[in-house]
Every structure is written in C-alpha cells, then in structure tokens.
Amino acid sequence: MLRNILARALRAASMLVLAAALTTPGTASAQTKKIVPFLTAESSPDAVAQLTELIRQFEKDNPEIGIELQLTSNDNRASRIINSVSVGDELGIFEIERRLVPDFTQAGYLLPLDSIVREIGVENFIPGSLLYWPWDGHLYQFTSDLSAATLYWRKDLFEKAGLAEPDNYERLLEASQRLHGKDGISGNAFESSNRGGVQRLVTFLWQNCGDFYTRSGELAFDRPGARQATEDYAALNKFAPNGNHSWGALDPINSYVAGRVAMALFPGRLGYQVGTKAPEIAKGTGNREARVARGGRGPRVVYGAVTSYAIGKTVRHPEEAKKFLKFMFTGDPLLKYSMSVPGHIAPAIKDVQARLLEQDDAYIKQHRDWVKTILEATTYFNAEAQNMGSITDDCKFEKSFVPMPWSARVMGQAPVTSTMFQRIALQGTPVEQAYRDAVGAFRTEMEKWKKENTWFTPPDPNWRPPGMKNSQ
Image 1 (cartoon, one colour):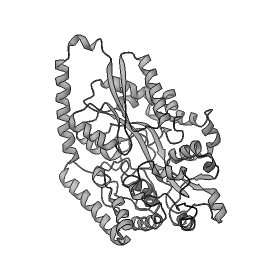
Image 2 (cartoon, rainbow, N blue to C red):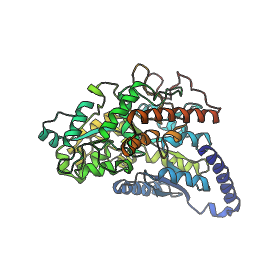
Image 3 (tube, rainbow, N blue to C red):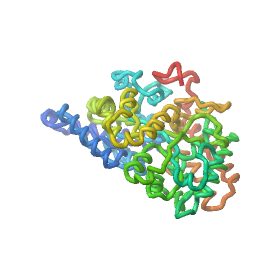
Image 4 (cartoon, rainbow, N blue to C red):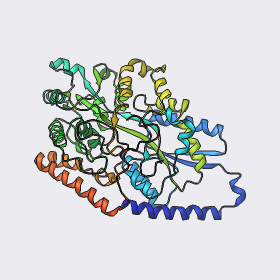
C-alpha cells in the first residue's frame, strides 16, 4: 500500500538527513550555498528557459541559496516521486499529482505551507485555487497555476462539410461520424489512455449529472448520468485515431497540430502549440466552451487542474524552499512563467491573470479570444481527485474542496474508467457490462480503503477553505 511505503520512506529519509547533519563539519555550512531541489513536469523548452532565467534572478538576489532544477514528464512524474521517497532521496520542492496528495499527506511527508498564503493574502488568489486538507485545515500544496479544458475544432472542415458548431453531444457525434476517415483525418481526439482518458471523460460525466463519489465519500458512479456519459463517450471513441488507448500526455496535441483530428478537448497548451507551430491549421480552428451533454444541457463545468507544489518534510532548508516558492509564483516572476505557455499556464493570482491578457505578445495578440475563453473556464473547472462529489443529486456543480482519499487506487496507473473503455474498444466487451464492472470496481476499492483507514470520517459539510467561506 502506498501509504505504508511512504511512511517507511519518511522514517528512512529522516534518518538519512539526521546522519548527514551529524557528519557534516560545522564550518562548511557557513561557506556553502543552501541547495533546494526543485522538481517540475513543466518541461517545454520555453518554460524551461523561463524557469532557468527566474532561478538565476532569485539566486542573484539570494546568493546564499541555490535552486537545483530537476525536470521530469507528466507521464513519469508519479513514479519519479514515489521512487525518490522510497529510497530516501530529498525531494525538496516538487510538483505533486492530485491522486498522490492523500497518501503523502497521511504519511506525514509534506510541510504545511499556510504561512506563504498568509504573507501573500488569501484574497489575492483565484477563488477555489488553494487546495487545503479539510481534515486538519492546513495547506500542503502551494498553487502555482491553473488549467482548464476548452473544445478546439476545425472550423474549415466543418464549414466544408456543412456541419454546425459542435455545441452539444449530438453535433459532436455527427461531426465525428462524417469527418472520420476523410483525407486521413480522425473524427476526434477523445482518447481512452490511462491518464488522458480520465481527463477527457470527466467533462462528459459531470455535464450528464454524474460523478464518481459524493462529497461524503459514498458511491455516485451508479447514477444514470454516469451510464449516459459512458455510452456517449464510448460511441465517440470509435472515431478517434487508432492506438489512442496508449497515448502519452502530448499525443492529442500532436495529432491536432499535425492536422490528423477534427476536434480535441484539451487545456490551453493545445491552443498555444497549434497557434505557434501550425499557423495554417490555427487559421481554420475554433475554440469554445465545451458543451458535451445531449442538447448541450447539464451544469457548466469542465475538466481542469490546479498545478501545485509541495515541500517534502525532510527538506534540508525549509525556509529557503518556501522563500523560492513565494518568489516564483507571485508578481512578475509568475507572469513571466505564465507567458512561457500563455493560456495553458493560467496564474492563480488574480492581478497576474488579468495582466496576462494585456501582454505585448504575438500569440496573445492573435489569439486573445482563445486565451480569454480558457481563463474564463478556470472559474468553472473541476478535477475528480481535487473535489470529490462536486455534482449534487439535483445536478448542480458546487465545488466540494474535498479530495478523494483513495484516488491512487481508482485513478492510479490503470484508472478504472480507462480500463473500462479499453475493454470496450479492444476486447469487444459490451458497454453495459463494462460499465457495471466499473461500478463494482469503484465500490470495492472505496470500501477496501475505508476498512484499512479507520481515521476517515466525512469532513464537516459546512467546511470551506479560507477565502471561500461565503461562496463556491
């Protein structure tokens, strides 16, 4: 079990740090920089260039501190972090996946970061962007930026085929059917891969009034809306490119930029890539709020994520690590970092997000409407492992701020829903049977986790994180 692995790793890492402190000569510490490791999955060339420059600026202003930049990928991030913890490596500052947060928090591996927010002012953050742990009220993840999905579609292909703008499920399906296979183009990029499949599905799930669990941790995937979303997504998946069940994080983008798909549901990185790498395709591209339920009905909600950084409790220089986090993700440094992939990296600080749209930048000038649509989507986005049970029984979207404690089990390396769609597409399993099996898996894994974690009780239904007391 991951929690037990992390607990053992924490004890081992603590012993390593203590041993190092005992064997290091006292005179050396005054002459050596305090090195803080910084692990991130934001590894695009533009982002790395900005990170490197900002680190250089920080080190110039703080000559006693050194930041050790470590890069990983979205696909390898989880295994990198878990392996590092298991062998006692010092992680320092690291970008943490939502599905790992409950286990890392319960294992006691993360430093509380409330003090950084108090210094900045909670009122300066985009509402709902700070992910507090509701069982003790502390913040263990400092939010750097947000991302939210919008729908990109080939307006030129749609107009040529006489198709209407894809503003509901029926039009998505019609366009997928009619455009699929023409001139080597697939109807859509709605994948069934392990990670991306979940990110694409949940917009369908929530807009059809479904969810995985309730806010109090009871099963919700057996709702009619979940069955409808499964049927609709499985139908659309027939018109996605072959091999989409094994796609990596960037394959939907690469397919769209290469002109091989007619539609894609993706955060702002896709827009930036097509706008800067494939200007001819960008000219014929539309970007709009995703409406994917039948008739365009359902709550206004899309997939999105909060990108956040944690600090390992065994970090050798905690105050220096906090100082860099505050520097990096506020003010001008945050704006510069956001401009490395504008639209995808949406600042979590209100005034910095507002400044983003006014930058003298070629992409912003040409596709300001795209970026504005994406930033607006960060006000109604949701993430399954961040906000368990945000779709109410009466089909309203009310962000819960309650993380899914057992998310590593059902959204881990082989997410339940991705396995469900892969069985449908690759094994010919009937949709209804695959759906029933998924319902059973969601129920079984949740019940097993609760039996092994007797500390769990639903959080106070009236609890809201700081800055969100009077609003959702």
